Amino acid sequence: MSDPHENFRNIVSTGGDLTRARWEAVSDKIIGDANRLLGVELSREDVIALPSARIATLTDEPLSELYLDEIQQLEGVKEQVRQHELREALEQGDDEAHAELARLAPHQRMARARRLGMTDQPQRAPTSAADEATLLRRLMTLSPAQRITKARAWGLIE
View 1 (cartoon, rainbow, N blue to C red):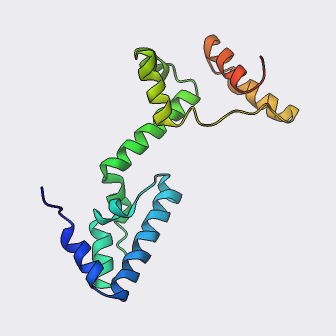
View 2: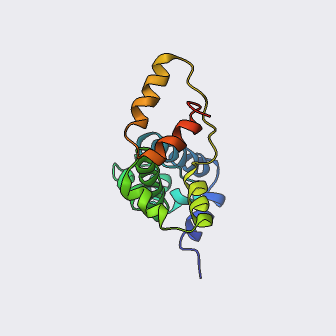
View 3: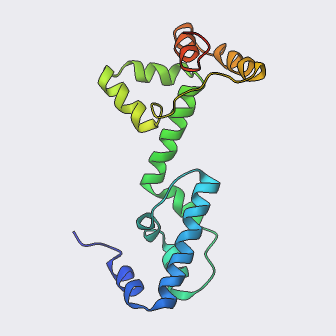
């Protein structure tokens, strides 16, 4: 299967310093805005798929305001948003999200937790009474089994 953006890559690579500089500026802006405004991570390969980025690079026109909409239409971005929403639901104790995970086999649950980045962040014990009170308030929104698990993870009980 042919790469649909091969011609664009060739133009950027052979177009000289000005074209490469435009491409880098446009892609850096889009990557930064996607992270800051939408909370998603993009690569330059993702940016190549955006018509607004290609047009801005080749014409030196300002970047179209539609680029944020184009970013949200990327399949990788949609998946990042879905994963972020699932993680938030799990952290907030959403029963439906926990029920969805409970239906998975143990090895599938661990794989999902790794993909969501929920196993990489060690929790620290609270450093002040205010921190502990905040954690206790959050615990009260969870089911009893989840309370015990989270309380151990947060260092509130051993």
